[in-house]
Length: 284
Image (cartoon, rainbow, N blue to C red):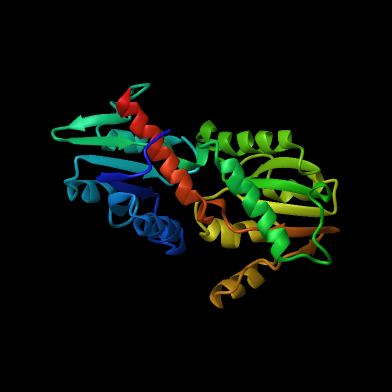
């Protein structure tokens, strides 16, 4: 068992961040506030890669003997495994494996693995999928075996690791035998999100966005790809309304669309699991 409290440590929750959409950073602040409330750490701070406060700025302000940095990222991709470790001095140019724990004078820095690749994300995904159907039971709450579950990821041909956690979770959930079928679909790779109507053999479809935040990909791009007219989505965005009405009938299917997996409250516990894991590295 790992530790449950880290009274001499600082936790830094690291998000990608963007100046284009304030919603993209909301998840970082959400989970930081929850973990701050639990009083597990001496200090909990938010940091970002592409907006303020930036990671190096936050780290330089911390004097605790131990600092854990947990990336709120989905995959072990270029940013989390290459760019950020190099910026932190954990990885040299062209270096393969790197040490995630480093002693810096009197301070120990632990750079944890991303939350999205942790095994407990299976339960978070299942919670999101069940939650949206139970909240909007039309015309009744369907049995899970009457539904096809789609995990919608970003994907990119520039990094093969981007799709791996989405496909891995699809495999794990498929093996549980809960749903009629389980598929991974992607924003920028095949199979595409819009292909869900051809892939599904059930009338009921549940789409869970495997994204960290309810940013524009989740609130605008995916609803449009699922068939909602762009002007309707943009109007709902302007009015600060949900951009998908659950369930919506499209091409003979009833489609339930959940919030992002990253904004689920259970992710705070996944963050703690990553910290416990990192604390064991130091013990070893």
